[in-house]
Image 1: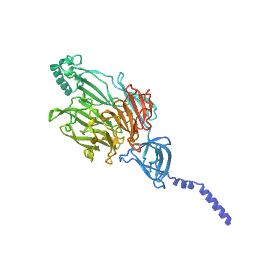
Image 2: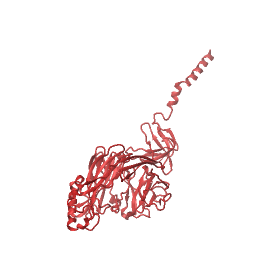
Image 3: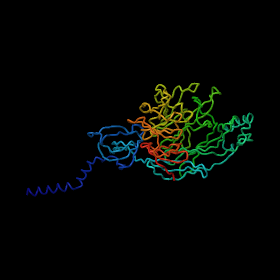
Length: 537
């Protein structure tokens, strides 16, 4: 009988082990239970998510926060793009992935926990736009990936140019300003008007104005762009120089397969909104009295920050010319324009939750006495506590006024390049806004003088700088590690005769599109410095 009981008991244990109860016990011990499901496969690319705190995500030597041999070895800032090489592994309440940074170093990083993701799937690509100014006018669009794949996208049509009488488009201020200038020419130097559209014109309102080329400012969200159309004319000076523009420009919001949204017009002589900081009038593009100095989209492409430059006179001294700068925010979906403040060098931070800018105190000789860094967030403006003069730096270097160069900021808006003006700007510094920290000096490549710099960008996840010279040469410079400050000209893959005139950076700066003066294109890998031809079908 005892053997029978033991046999029955043994059968019960076997049955219990193969039942659903046993399986539930196994599932309960799965370390991935309750964690966010992984969205990333080996070989895919991902981006550290923007959550507004500017902290980024920790890098670890091994998976797990509480495991032997695992320790935090670094930090990946918000927006950093990585490539998945192993994982996922669930440990200590986190889904872990082994990833490679753009510099090919490998670490472990958390993809997410039980509440949220730290990484998001991300393909490094950009929508590249070019204008077609001949009829039928359009914005041509291509999608370009960092590996060089190109897909042609649908065009965005732009109305063909039209010629109108000034009174149909121009604002009264521009008609009056043009009439004042026209009367001076007719009285003092009428010959300069011969052979121009102004010949025989006695009232500027009657002059015929052809529409000129349009400008495009692409948004970070695919297909969206700001378009500016111009009905402007130059009037020659008595000395025969081309002179300044008169007329009006109109600003529009466009996106694929939707009607053009008219935002607002602005005249060349509509007046300055505020005249507090009279900065040097020695600026680029002096023919424009009113000029878009910067057009900066918010990351979500709902808002455009405009930095508008006005050339005018000092209200206390009519013989003293000044350049004034004012900031506006444009809600493109509601066609609402909000004036902000005088200032320059605008850039977004915190995933678009903060707008930063500089304003100034100057003396009568245009010398900048102080620069103040401000941020606009949730409708409140606050000053960032840093004194540029005390630190021996210049956030808006005067050496670049005449060339129009604007120094870059990182993609997350947490660092900006500044000039070490105490030494005449042969070197620069990187300023970390959240830490109020200046980097060690960054030497400008020896082949470049400050006035030779056409463009400069943070690249390769902010580990390098990308320089473009006025002579069309491209340089890549390291900002980290033992090679810090090492720079080299980009030549591998470029024809010796190529003269680069523009650079378009892909997200993260791991690649860039180079355009030369013959409208040929190349794709530059900013880590390897290798270039490949880019065919835009």
